[in-house]
Each structure stands twice: as C-alpha cells, then as structure tokens.
Amino acid sequence: MAYTDTNATGSMNSDLARQQYVMGVQSAHALEKQATQLINRQLERIESYPEVAALLQQHLAETEVQIQRLDTILGELGSSPSMIKDLATQMSGNMAAIMHTVMSDEIMKNHFANVAFEAFEQTTYRSLIAMAQTAGFPQHVSAYEATLAEEEKTFSTLLGMTEQLTVKFMQLSAEGEQAKR
Figure 1 (tube, one colour):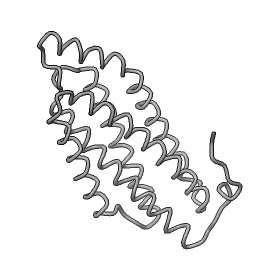
Figure 2 (tube, helix red, strand yellow):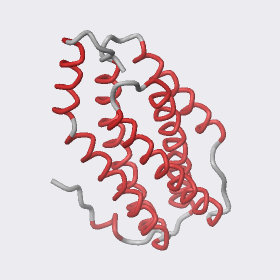
Figure 3 (cartoon, one colour):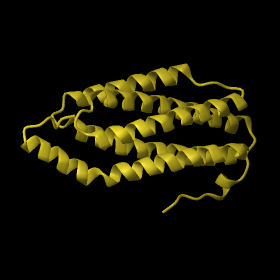
Figure 4 (cartoon, rainbow, N blue to C red):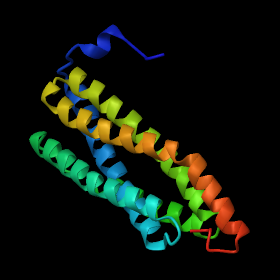
C-alpha cells in the first residue's frame, strides 16, 4: 500500500523545505558514493561469478551517471555534496565489503546486501521525488525517475538471480571449487 498525503503533492516554498531537500540530495549523493565503494570492493574479489561481475560493472557505470545527475541538481540549488557524508558513507561501504570477505559464503552475503541496498536506494529516490515536488523543484523529478528506474531494474535482476546464484554457490562448494567469491 502506497503512502499518500494530500500535502505531499503540493508545493511548499519555505526555507525549511528547501534546506531539507538539499540535505536529501546530499544524502543521496553520499549513498551513491557508498554504492561505488561497495561495487568496486566486490569487483576486486569476484572470481567464480562472471554474471554477478557483469551486472555490478553495468550498475557501476549507471551509478557514476547518477552521481553526475545529483551533482548537476546540487549545482542548480547553489549547493555541493557534503564531504562529511560522502566520506562517511564511502568508509561504510568499504567496511561492509571488507566484513563479508571473512565469510565462507562471501558471494551470498554480498548478494543479500546488494538486494537490500537496491531497495534502500529505491526508497531514497521515491523520497527525493516527493521532496522535489513539495519544495517546489518539479524540474528535478525526471532525473530522479530515471535513477529510480535504474535502481528498480538492478533490484529486479539481483532478486531474480537469487536462486541461480545460490545453486551455483552450492555446486561449486560441493565440487571443491572456489565458491566463496
């Protein structure tokens, strides 16, 4: 069930709404920076799952474009990315990826985290769409919708490969092959 509020679709041109919107865009920028770290760390380690590597490489390219979209919007708002948020989330992304390296089922832990992360990103862009509309910046909505569509596609692809990835992991393990990553 979708959340709807009649006030959420109207324009609110207050300074507070603008500040909250800028903060939301900065947070999304930091989130995408975190995504690049997560993806890069995973790509450095994947050995036995070329289908996962291909998807991650494709999404990394999309993520770079998403960051550019956010940079453009921040520039239009007379703002810039939050260096503190970007740094914190990049460190977080690196730590999350590192934590999974010690797991005997690293590929599965990364897969679960990637599915959850894509859901988080979808929610972020749905929120940004509402914020842009409410704060009086409807011209930014199409950029968020483009990003949301990319995140939905990646989420769907990842979710759809869960069973196949699980079976491949189990088969490689049973054959004594490199299954972890």
